Each structure stands twice: as structure tokens, then as C-alpha cells.
Length: 379
Image 1 (tube, rainbow, N blue to C red):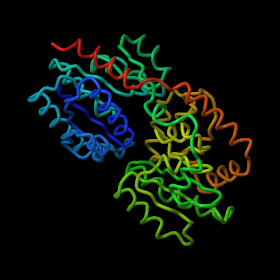
Image 2 (cartoon, rainbow, N blue to C red):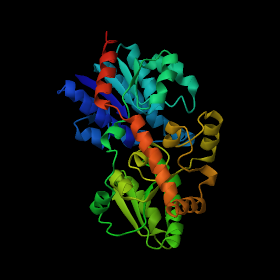
Image 3 (tube, rainbow, N blue to C red):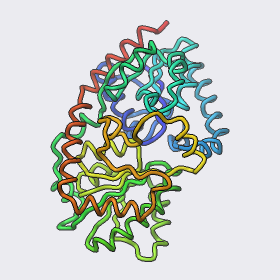
Image 4 (cartoon, helix red, strand yellow):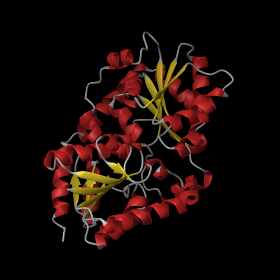
């Protein structure tokens, strides 16, 4: 079996690795090609273009990258039409994948979207376009089913693979030992994002926040997991210019270890917030965009919350400090308050335990079920 895939960022790469593992349970010789990150490539997926090219967020940023993105999509369409796969799976990245899926579906190639576009948060008017582009959706959140069923889009619940991969009881001591933290206290994880464009807005903010927090907690140790060498070098460049650099350890990968070891975390909104919740790490969520992009998002947003844990639980479990409010002073203050309040941390962890139970499912079997249904649409 030959399967086309397109993953657009680190979280999609992790989901794609789960997809490959599931498919090979039933089709051991399955071949994957398209756009894949390092985790998918380690499992044998062939990437025709660097995944980082797609890792762009924000209206202005996308506009700048648009000629390149459109060129890549045209080349992928030509490739998959010339060498049709038995199935195509778009992994998240709906703004890129839906148009690609629409062309492939018209040509008779079954198409699946893994991770439903966030019509529950904003742009609900995309539902007809999704129905036109795919034969089904693999959903990682249980609350999405009624939305897509009402729109006539077949949907398969697969749970969130992270909820299955991460144990419900986290070994905090083992994580600290693996990172050689000794008796360091407090330990603060900083996750500024996986995209270059995110670090453009967050690197300085996170460094400045750490500097202020270090003044309040002189013994604090900061862990900064970064997804690759490029983002690490970008963060290092900002750190070098800090007048009083905080006690900071930069890591390449190892985000789960950092979150499991940390007492609290500052996390850029996205899949990393879900990862932190599943690892039972109390956190503050933040995010910055260009002023124009932030204004446009606010005009079209329908969700009450910004961070995934709050959206899934439908309550304000985690503090969200977004856009104009995201200053080093505000972020350091929120983190300090959390460090000073053990009861608040315990209450947040209890909510995260409930979230973990909500998202647990047999992802491999769910993926195989969705694929089987999609293949029924093959000509």
C-alpha cells in the first residue's frame, strides 16, 4: 500500500508517526511519501519537501510565504496525480491540505483529514469545503463528532495519541534525574513554540520573563526544549543578548522530559499545552501574533478560550495571557503566583487528570477503522 501524507509542523509529525505505526499493523509493507518531519522519516516516510517550509502561522507571515506554499502544493498535486496513492492523509495544516485534498479526491483518490479543522473555534463556514475535500475525518477530540455529523462529514474518533502514549501517572523524579537536575528548585519549563515564526514573537518574551522570575526565585532552573537546531540557534541568539542571562538549559527535543520534570511551565498555545496537561505540569498559556493577525483572529473566533486544555474541559483551568497582555511582567507574575500556591497547582493537576481520561482511546484501532472506511470510496 502507498499512502500520501502531508504534515506541517512538529505536532503533525508526531501524529503522522502514530499513523504509520497503526497502518503497518495491518499493512506491514506500506510506503508513505509527501511531506514528513523527522519522526515520520525515522519510520521510513519519504519527504519531498522540508516540513519546516509549511510551519508558518499568522496572516502576514502566510502572505509572505504564499508563493512558495502555492508552488509546493502544485508540485504535490502533479506528483500524486502522476503516481496516485491508494490513500492520502492530510495531517492537520488544513489551510494547506484541504485544497490539495480537494484536487486528489476529484481524481478518485480517497482523502482523509487527520485532526479536524477547528471549526468549533473559528471559521465554521469551512464545513462545506471540508465535505468537498475529504471522504472522512480522523478526530482527536470527542466534542467534534456532533459538529461534523450535522454537516454530513464522516468522522472517526481516534482519541489523542498523546493521551495513550503518556502514562496517567507521571514519574516526576525519573524525569528530573534524566535531565541531571539534582535538587534544583523550582524548575520551570519554557516552550516558546515549534515554528520559526513563533520564536520571532516569543523568544525575547520568554527570555525576559525568565530574567524577572529568576529575580523572584534565585535558585530557579529553566528548561527550554526546542524542536530542532534552527530554532535552538534562534533562541540562543536572543539569550546571548540578555543582560543577566537566567540559569537556562536549552534542549533539542526532550519536551516531554522537560514538562515531566518541571514544577510549572510557560507554554505557547498549541499542541504543547495539551502535552503539558497530559504530563500533569501546571502552566500558564501565552501567545503573540502580529497586531493585524490578532485582530483578524478575534473577529472570526467563536471559542471562549484560546488554550486546548481550557477548550476541551470547557472551563478556565489554565491562565491565558494573550497578545497585548503577554508582557514579561504579567507572565512572570502569573508563574510566580502559581509557584507560591501549591493548592492551585494541585487543583490544576486534578483537572488535567480528568482531561487525560477524556482523551484516552485506542488510537491505532481508530485510525485503522477510519482508513478502512475511506478505502471504500476508492474507484
